[in-house]
Image: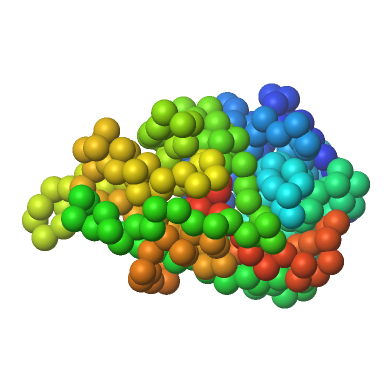
Length: 292
């Protein structure tokens, strides 16, 4: 039977139930109600999310969501899209449904003025995105974990952000995370409006219980004192260790004297309204991931 690809409104109960069922079966999740909507609907003024579904007759057999993220690139406010929540039913794999869910999103998103489509693939989707789907592979993430407060001098006070780097709207991203009931997000904001946000957890290392904070993003004004911002966050939430995880091309790599590769996957990019390889720097923290 023919497979048709079409946009859907996942807030409609008949689609919501089918999308949740497909994703739960594929990934072992326990999605209910508006979980996917809340994970993908930002308050961008430049773009709405796109939801593409593959149908065999009346049955939904594939799905791919695209999140609209505002950003700044070369001094201009733009929008890019993030491909996520990709799934195809077991019985329909090998029929190029994922390929079509990707390629048929390109013209609608290009028409909206999107810079491009971001992918943070897993081991199954990665070879397809960077292979036949022609995404650019921009490599992985770096990690730095600090024991606090002993290592304040290891953090630079300020960094310079390159105008050539794509800088996402981290405040918008924070609001996206906070609207999801399942996310346990903490945020510290100083008197100047700079903030640092992420996830808090209790961990055990060498038999010692520690409070750990994984940074999801930083919203900062020009010349913000990053050392003071991090210390204020650690003091407020009584944090013992803090991990910073950012893309390898990011300006945030300037923050630390030494870091190490992370096992958090890699970033790939499909340009829409820019030339191929025009964007080489992505100032992204790990909080951009839809599963953060």
